[in-house]
Length: 621
Ligand SMILES: Nc1ncnc2c1ncn2[C@@H]1O[C@H](COP(=O)(O)OP(=O)(O)OP(=O)(O)O)[C@@H](O)[C@H]1O
Ligand SMILES: [Mg+2]
Image (cartoon, rainbow, N blue to C red):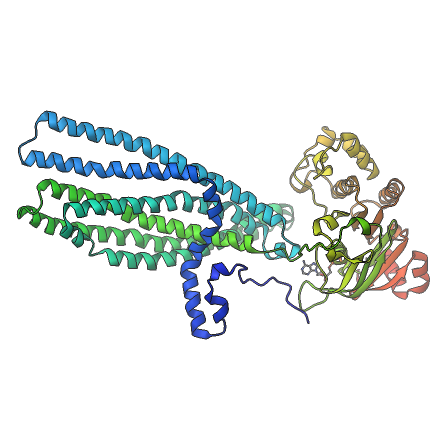
């Protein structure tokens, strides 16, 4: 039975969905109800990822929140002083000295508010920046631990967008969003207390529009969450289009495809604009609705408060203070709209980040055996089947044995599965059927990282980093000397060329090694593999851009300098693979013939045909 290769998209953590989801699946209406709830709560639940980080900055947060509360308290004192001043004025108690002292108090409060506002910004914004950095590091570490199929599902642009834009949104949500929410809550409730203290009935009037506020907030915030997620998704698509356009610039130029590439980016940009506008429309509704409700409260205060003042139920000072408090209440009400939209955008981004953090590598490490004892054994591929697409096998019933200390070549038509077989040997993928053994153990019994550590690998497309030649070759290893790098470069016949560079091995090679030729890139990748001194050397068509005589020299140098190394090579060059101790020829996803070049020439019709195709450049090649 062939399962789907793609990892199921359903979130791994049941917390995200709530208990109902799994139990009620299949029970139509109940399931829909649960999913509706999920839409409402899933976003906010995603914030659970941040709790451990927030906890680690609890001192900063405490100081910040305390300062915020002090700012709010000081702000609330101002209407009180105004009330006293107005009452003194209307009741004839006011003198210039009294008024001056009130003014002095307000000045003092203003200075205090400024100072504490600075303090809360510093002590709340610093942790949010740090949380953003730590979350980014964790995300990148997690991405690095993912298996190959993860990268087949997520484009570089998408991952880049998540690492930059989504994390930025999350920082805003925590920094301004959560803080603003707390401010709105503290300020709003304290203001209400003061209002109730002045007049209970008047406070009741201004609360009449409140249920409307709650209802509209709930409705609009759900739309914002939905829209924000679409914006972030489209941002990923745009980032990927731009990345592809820049990294493929040479081909784009060669094919004069600039207008096409430009239109692709324009199209993605247009879609992003539309998504952003749709989001802006929903967010735009918030403020007018809020302001309408605030003004409605003001109308009620003017009418009922004015009447109360005339009837002397409250003093003119109370009336002025009450309107001032209403103005103070405007901020929390307005902030709520802004804050909810920020939090919803942050929640949408966190959902996308959690999607990555919740995914598990499809290759699991379940070590059951230490690697040391098995290192000397043969590497055996036994009746292995593998597919990328569930509808089509790439390897089927494929078997071969790699002898230690020998040179093994894998040959066959283009696309017959050579690279795939090498990747299975290094456990980049696990087979769908069959087993690979090292010694007598299934390779799945070893720790994945330890097992992969046995292989030095040169991929078919050499991977070069935008660092110096030295750093590229010593890659990932510490304590490598210039002499060792030089030696490796000599083995791959590159030393003389590098010595001719103005900066020698300190030369910066540019992004993806653009300053090097194709053959130089291949040899840099090979030098890196040799320097890592691992027992298996896996070379996937490593000499396709190197001339035949250089290739021969390199192979001879490797075999004489690295005696005992197990060399596994996929190749299209007769001159190189004919020297292998054992050649495996692949056809139809399996090994159809094996032996030395001599044996195969004598016994295998298919092999002779392949050699003829390669040398004469005919047939399907
Ligand atoms: N990531 C992938 N997703 C889907 N199909 C893939 C993927 N990689 C390879 N394939 C398919 O698997 C088959 C074997 O590919 P593979 O790269 O192993 O062939 P190969 O023998 O190394 O070819 P070449 O001689 O060109 O290097 C091909 O038909 C290819 O289209
Ligand atoms: Mg290949």
